[in-house]
Image (cartoon, rainbow, N blue to C red; front, side, top):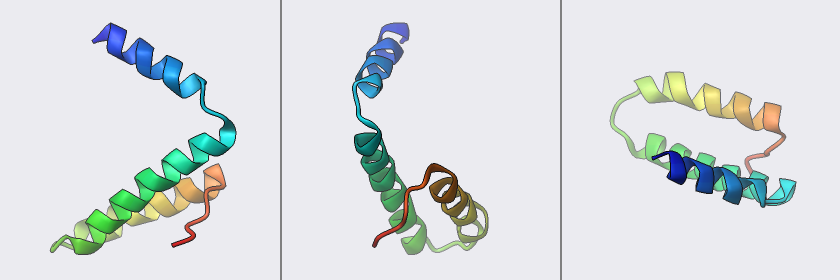
Length: 64
């Protein structure tokens, strides 16, 4: 497992700042889509505000 984490760390370090933002935007989009289609409301209340704050702090606007 240590080798895997080192490889992931190396790959992430090779990304430009813009590529990193695009990757995180895609990740956030997937989470937001899953939350929107879930039947429960707890994730709307707990997870969505965290994603909104993370987007704000990391300067990754939600352009969808």
